[in-house]
Amino acid sequence: MAGLCVVAAQAANQPQVSAQDVNYLQSSISGDRFEIIGGRIAMSKSSDSAVRRLAQRLIMDHTKSLHEAMSIAKQLNVKAPDAPTPSEVWELNTVRSLSGSTFDASYSTLEFKDHQQDIEETTFETMHGASAMVKADAKKDLPVLKRHLALARTATQSLGLSY
Image (cartoon, rainbow, N blue to C red; front, side):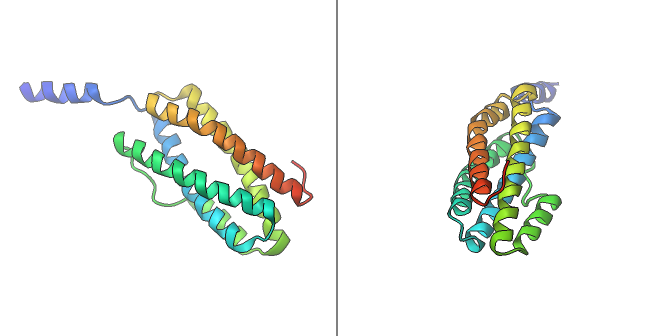
C-alpha cells in the first residue's frame, strides 16, 4: 500500500502532457533537424546573398531551438526523433540534387512554405497544448518562425519570385 502512495505521488508531480504536446514536440525536433541540414546544404550550394542569409539564420536559430526542445523532451519523458521525418528527408534530397538558380528558387520556396506551416502548427500548440512547458516553448518560438518566414519571403523576392 505504501508503494502505491509513492507511485501516486510521483504521478501527481509529473507535468501534464497531451498527445498534442507530444506530437508538437516531436515534430518540432524533427523540423529543427530538417532546418539545420537544409541550411547546411544551402550554405554549400548557394551563392545568392539572401538565400545564404536565410540559411545562416536557420542553422543558428534551429540549433538553439533543437537544444531547448531536446531538454524539454527529456524532462517530460518524450521520445525525441533522431532525424528528420521521411518526407523531410525526401525534400532535402530533392533540393540537394539541384544547383544554381534552380536550387536557390526551390530552397527559398520550400522554406517559405515550410515556415507558413510551422507558424500554423506552433500557433495551434499555444492555443491547444496541455503542457505549460511545451506551450511556453511554442510561444517563444513563434516570433522566431515569423522572422524566418520574412527572410524566406525576402529570399524568394530577390530571386524574382512572389509570395
